[in-house]
Image (cartoon, rainbow, N blue to C red; front, side, top):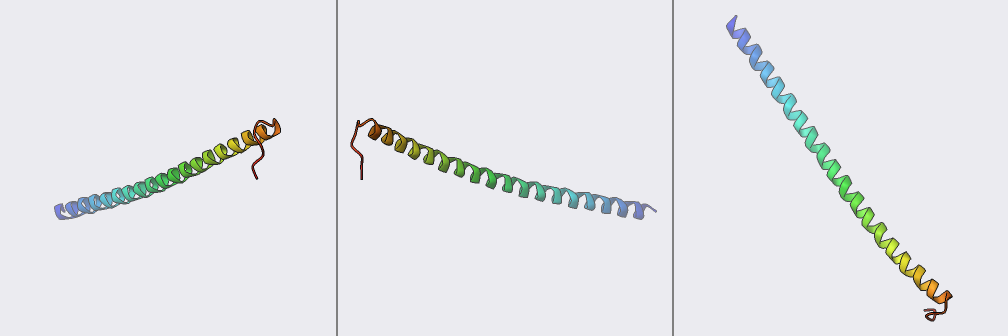
Length: 74
């Protein structure tokens, strides 16, 4: 009987350890995906900020042309 109890305890411990390792793997995978997503979103924000800056410069240039402050550039 004691051998059976020890075997059952060993199996339970091994199963719990395998489940823990699987959860750790899944957590690491989820973290990698989240970090990749954050990186992609930060890159998109940077691109949008650059686009906004360019459009602001263009709008200012057009306003200056309309107001005849500077000549139109061809």
